[in-house]
Image (cartoon, rainbow, N blue to C red; front, side):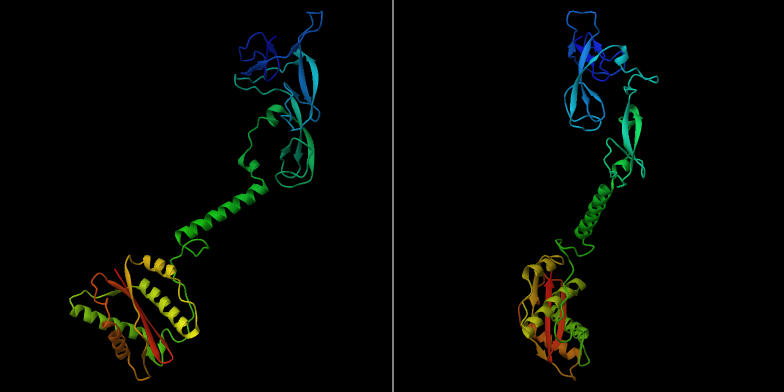
Length: 330
């Protein structure tokens, strides 16, 4: 016999599957030994037996396909009907499960089957495994569920991956500040002096009075008035307060790349007006202060440029002086 069934080992004259014993659809070259001088003896064949679980293998190809033991021993077995695995009673033409049994070790806690007595349980960590005999059809061919594959280690890894994916999504969408992702939030600083009110002088009113004076001059020159936006106001406040820190506390100047990135979120072209500080006292009104600040910019270039249509303004008070910074933007 030159061919034998890969599954049950029955010899065949030709490579013409399926096997007429078990229905398996693949043959392999047989290693057949004849008894010397006696052609009437049944065919025999060499198999390789696992020293751990006893499973027969057609080739010396460790590890064992059942329990992963690395040691296989050579044996010669006789091929006759008693050696062959019988066709299952419910055979339908594509079921090739052999009706042999195997030893498995079952976790007493979660029921997971293991090919060896090797506690702890790979699913739940329980130390107790009980020996059971299982049919090969049940033990080897059953398809594991997703829950069988979801060991504690995989569960922890899955949680970590999902958490990292969530952080990445939040950072990429700008929903929160995440290190390594650009943020469109304007940094907050703590400068000396006052940012909202000084000696009864409302600095927001001073800013509006200043902008009204500038827009009046723009309209007189035939240029559309500037519209104030909250985003540019925040950037102007940050830049003005950083200037105050630099002048009065010796701090570092703001990062120019950072400023360009912040401005780029508001406009494509911008200009900065930064007139020197003007003095004020407790009798100075917001209108007077705003007009005085406007006088400092009207003598410079750029305020009447008609390419700029939006603006941001900030006024900061310190040591009896008002410091203004204005951004012009297209």
